[in-house]
Length: 175
Image (cartoon, rainbow, N blue to C red):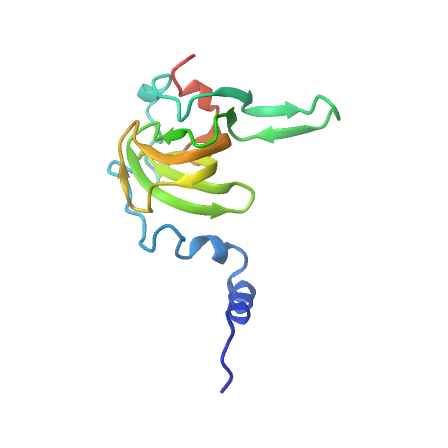
């Protein structure tokens, strides 16, 4: 009987389930499954109410250097789509939850680095990435303004309503 090595098992998993298996298994920061946030809408229900629009606190101090939407590179003239904003922060700054909810992801995600996703209910999610250190686990209930991570030198922040990226600046308190 042949014993499978860790790399052979990983290869077999990839061959059967595809790359998604790498990101849907047990995350490193927690082994449990996320609980849905109270008030989470079900298919067929209306997505988000707009009562939170323009009233959420900023996830970290700093200056926005990349805005949501189409971004044109000043040097090369190439265009890309930004699904969130980038905030230049001092490395090690506190990153806080913009609203209460349940942590649905806390791990490393390819292209985003260390990342936390919070389910705020009503099909609203906030995504914090390029983090220096994660302080929460999957399934944890978090309150508005509570520390969820420490930043690297840049924080990438996205806000999704009904599964679609929206401009986070429309939801954050104007500065």
